[in-house]
Length: 184
Length: 205
Image 1 (tube, helix red, strand yellow):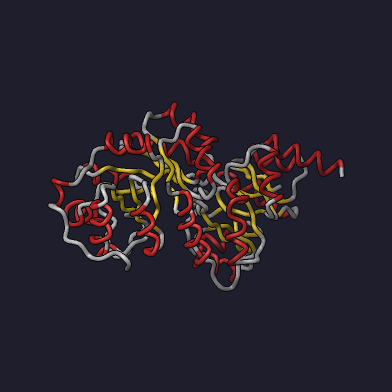
Image 2 (image 1 turned 60 degrees about the vertical axis):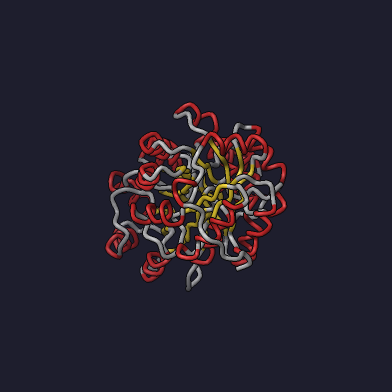
């Protein structure tokens, strides 16, 4: 479970639950830059969706800021050239792919560049059970699911279909996964 | 191309662009055939689907395909966002409407919906729902653009958002994206979709 946060409130909720990996999915990155950098310094792995956060340009200067000043672990984007740039800053690269219909999925999978990304993130994540066979025909990299995952049933279905990571903005789901981990 | 070239029918004025007639036909056969590969077109022409959606077709070879669809009494829709060679602008819309004589245009962009309506073709606005927070802004765009039809993608999202969409803006909804099994088609129709669009040939009645 990867908590998807959008402000310092949700950031602190995820940290308080003991999560050590976070996805900044939305909102103004610049408005939470202090707490994010502090969390990164304490070893929390932070990933940022460059297509959706506000306050950053899609360019090298933004990547340098994220990698060097903030100490983030990785970036997500639909843009292969941005990810290529990001790998030069030693960021983990997660290629976002929109799974809206088979035509678009095909285009997205074809855009997966070289070097291969660290992972691909399928949006909406709830489509993963339907699209996993098509994905596996074209790539073996880890699959993340993001978007429209709000219940534990959906999360379980996405993981059962072969996703490695499921991201959700739902606090209730963060709690359930945390509790399940403690039970293990 | 399997379809033989045909002469265009008497162009724009003769093209049926009645949303009411489209939905009357969808009430009998609630499926639109999505053509991803040209070799699937003959199957779609021979099927009972009332509408055929062209995605990713090359713009300047579309004419004969569209006219073949219309010669079968079906409506031809073109997805302008994905089409190769054509500007995604008013001139592109005007070309499809006047020169090719399409029945309707599919786009996810509000600006192109407005251009399509100005050309009096049926405007289908795609809602690309890859995350939950996009729905409100997408619906605001729909309210502003006033398309004739909204197409929700992917289909698996539709049950999660059907009520919300209807509450925000009353517009006929069709559903597409990864509809490959009869039960998925059925689920969308049961939740209030007027039709599903699918490239899965076995789902074309």
